[in-house]
Image 1: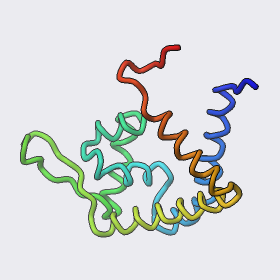
Image 2: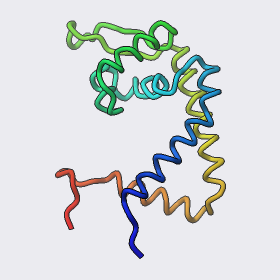
Image 3: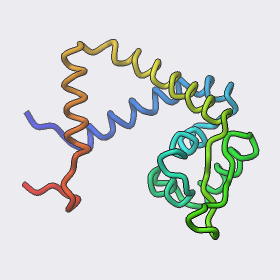
Image 4: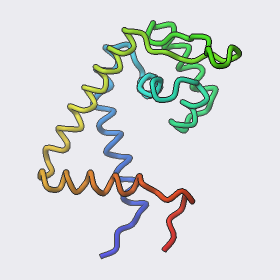
Length: 144
């Protein structure tokens, strides 16, 4: 039985799209657009806009717009980086942390609804498979 990687990729993207679409109302209640949410969720791990762009595979100009919106909404603030006074780092505000956490909870709840259709044993196997896929060799592409 052969499994097409492109088909699996497409199914995964479709699942993520369905989950995100189901959460757009809750994101809107929080004052967030979908891509703003992704930027907000990445700020603690990647406090510089260029890092966020790299992590999320978004154009730097787009990240700049999303950051500007998040600052205007009071979810993020810019601070001078003490290690390099020429740079600004992003910091979540209390409101930003609350919005991020509520949005993540909404996404988790929707994803859990989808997971409820899968046996607990298959969930464990799915987690194992996803971790294995993320643990790629340093060289990038896997060799046969």
